[in-house]
Amino acid sequence: MNTRKICLATAVVAAIAAPAAAGTPVFEAFRKVCGDTHADYASIVSALNTNGWKQVDTKGSTMEGVKVTDSISRGLTVGESHLTLFAWRGAKGDVQISACTVRASPAKSDPLKADARTWTGFDPQSVDAQSGRIGYQFTDDADAHRALAKTDYDAAAAGAGLELMTLSTDGSDTILDLLKIKK
Image 1 (cartoon, rainbow, N blue to C red):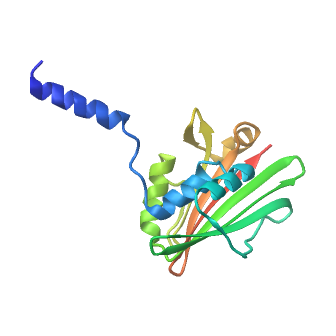
Image 2: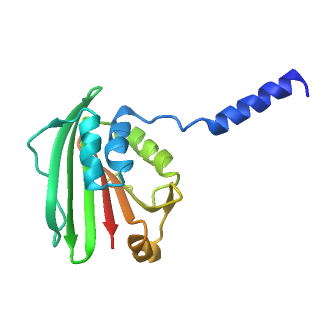
Image 3: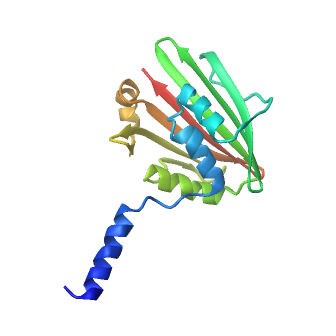
């Protein structure tokens, strides 16, 4: 094998082994606290404490009909964006529900949408062109996100959990939300 082929083979192996490029700082902050924790409340609290988030006094919305048992709010400045996080957990009967929402002010939504697509590994399943809101429905399968059809929701909730991620805009702000449902 000549030197050129060896260099090309080495480059291909390095590209395959290299982790995916990091997203924007705003998405990386969301990913570390909400995404990597799968919206698990105890894991969110731990991630907040190790990633520099500070106590803030803000309230977010929860889900109607859910008895909320815990909630937390924190803030962080990343570059030119101020992030406000509101996370909670609760139950509706035997169903455990948790959510982790980050509002980035200001933040351009297009780069964050690209980051979400890269992180999930698939295109959004719902897109509202008028409002700019996109949504993903997935579960974790062997440490990878697996896109779900509506017919898969119950099985996912009974297994690793059904995760619903949305990105929406409110003026110059972008809102990233991850909701997890587990039976």
